[in-house]
Image 1 (cartoon, one colour):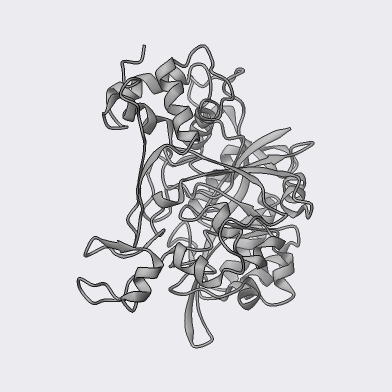
Image 2: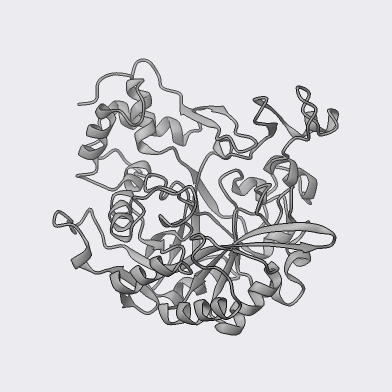
Length: 420
């Protein structure tokens, strides 16, 4: 069976995150989006962890559902709205010195049970780490030592290095990262990592250029800070039976047959795709950065070097070459944005909201975006817009230095008519 997995997100207790990120709201949003397995996020935070224990019930080994008593009365489960499983997960932040350089890493951990979470939190408390400060706590420990500690607590724990190319807080980041996974985690511990997360600012073809990554599954997740962002990237997995161990097996599968595909942002929409200076609203490709000695031509300060730069810097293959491990992937634009483009109105307009909600009475958002044939409830003009996005007919303005890029579907004026 195929399942859509979004393991990396945050709770309302993480910085710069929506207060609407509660467990019931996440479950309902995943129903609408079409996400089958979602991460809990932030299991180290005391209040959030208490809510996980109170509101979740284990329904399959190592996977949980929200207790129905915590869902609103209008919650519906039918052929459209399927039950959502939670896998225990959290992103942790490491800041430390190595090789005379300050390193900053974000690491996502998938945990086999809430009982294991209790052991992790007890160990963190014993070390005096402040779990109350943030849903994604900052730990003064190396990524290597944290990974060793986690494996000592329970060898079933899964580590996925997060958004590996982001300049800040990433294993390959230009500001504080490394030139290889081996350099970061060491010869023995690096073998115990099954997968890496490509992040919003890169896509699979960019990562195919790095020969070291042939040994790892390339996975994608939303890193959602709001309900709306859930599923903006995700991973399709094939599982015989749904459980934590089977999910772990899919991530570890050396034949790479259990990762079916990934659902992707257009990487230009990511906040760190190009090099740039946000203060000066200046961006450029790596070759131009080199010509300018990596300085902003407007203010003279150092540019923030983005994912394209680092991929080119570490590439062992030419762009366009495919390794044997390469998997399928699909670019997506959120449904609200496509509807808004048809009307030439904002994605948060009342008109878009009404059409969006009506469509979701028939199918989930991801089912609509990925439909192979035109369903009866999708009008011709919207279907043509969906096909245009799949064909790559989009306008792109790439993101840089923390500013999101802009991706818009190219809408043929002939189909830009009223949706009924």
